Image 1 (tube, one colour):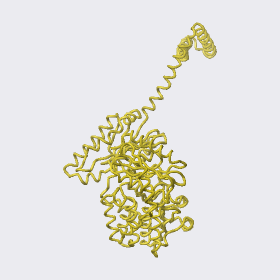
Image 2: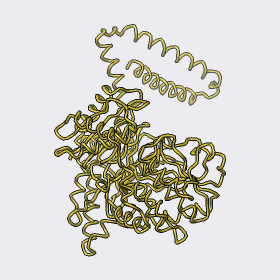
Image 3: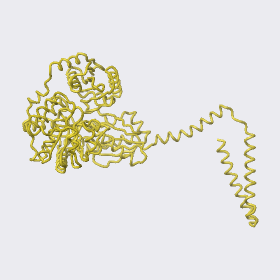
Image 4: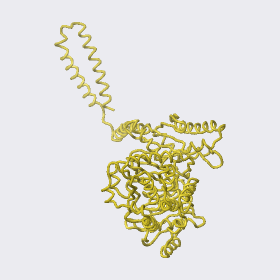
Amino acid sequence: MSCRRNLNLLRVCAIILLGEITAFLSVDYRFSIALVPVLILIFIADTLKTLKDTRRKTPSLPDEEKTREKAETLSQIEEPATNVEEERLVMAYIQVDNFDEIMSVCQDENRPELLARIDKIITQWVQKYNGFIRKYESDKFVAVFSKKELDRVEEDKFSILEEIKELKVGPAIMVTLSIGIAYGQNTVLETSRMALNALELCLGRGGDQIVIKAGGKTQFFGGKTREMEKYSRVRARVISHALRDLIEESDAVMTLGHVFMDMDALGAGAGIVTAAKGLGKPGYILLSPEQSPSVESLMSLLLEDEELCKVFIKEEAALDKMTKKTLVVVADTHRPSFCLSQKILQRAEKIVVIDHHRRGEEFIDNAFLVYLEPYASSTSEMVTEMLEYMGEEVKLSPLAATALLSGIAVDTGHFSFKTGVRTFEAASYLRRMGADPTMVFKLFQEDMETVNARAEVVKRAKVHFGHIAISYYLEKPKNPSLSAAQAANSLLEIKGINASFVLVPTDEGISISARSLGDVNVQRVLEKLGGGGHMTVAGAQLKNTGIKEALEKLQAAILEYMKEGETA
């Protein structure tokens, strides 16, 4: 405060000095050059003397007053910083998830009213928090908030997600939203790009949720609704034609699955190499060093075929065959760290990603073509649909059709989970191509030891929160991931159980397999432990962790999820 008074006093003194100089010059300007510097020095010395005398006469402040004055000064410094943070720009992109399906079901005379109601709910929600909003497409909006208002939105738990669901078309179809939000970037353009990335992440995870990106962190809200099946096959046809063009431009096609390959990845691979062969290109499937017994049974079956036995290849041989024109198709995963070969992925210049899992933050960013559909039951279903549009040159053999059908069967629990109309249509097409359902059933047969071990896991299970079953293996089984998944399915067959989690020891730590009937979003639970998957099917890996510690972490994650109010 004293510094500020001194500064003001100096300003007044300077004005007085200039006035005196001006008056003096008006009397006799001839002396100006010689006397002005002297006058200035005299006046400055007199001013400094006056300030010094003033300080001597001013009594020193008590310690309490000094402390209070210092606190006031600090608060004046901190207050502007707080205001800047509260007024930080927040950008949001809003999209109606199932717009095409809603419009196709809604009667023509009711469409204007429905559109008006959707616009009104979204606009009023944004304006409630003093935000700015503009509609730039029939199903897309952009909005701007302040950080202070975003905090209020979070406190309200994003009520817009539930409010919009009150709009229903017909008896079953609800309107849902995906919202991507970002803030904290250096420029408005960077914030806009980050918000669009958040929206893309929302859509890749099945919609009906909000993703916030800020400060290098990503937060998820919502995601309680099951993925809505899309009845239109337009996108499948467009992707099929694009994939055909890429295959025809390549010199070879290599299918890359995920670590610990399952039937879905193998079945999809069989479909891709069939397409490559039909279009006159060599196709290969990278061999996995470790897979489940059922996959080994399917692979043994495929190796009996004169043509398919030639498609399996090891990493070293695949790297030798790769050129700049080689097309690499990543099937049943979109995470680089999950891919079967990092070397092939890094060397590939043309990459296609085909996956049905909800999108995570880790993603293969340099792909030429991405076909990510979380509503689909399996990657095998997606590949089957594409094969139908490939052209007459591409013909499935009965064995390849059986491999694709087994991929659908394993991911749907024999058509019990995530099974839609298009799932049955794909199965029907495969059956017409010669797929053998009995052979698929035999591929899933188990030995007595495996069945007994699973029975012990079911017996060991405990029920938490009234409807969630948790159990574990004491020792590592022959196939940890498959055994845990089957045990989780068995627990879900118990009356009153809506979700199940099974832990199993592995060479690296503990693997968790989760299943749900839809009332509990197991993906959201296991994402807290670094895992992921779907709303009803998910998994996680805990490295360097024992059973006891893993159980504690799992229970804490479930409790946190329950507190968030994500259960129905």
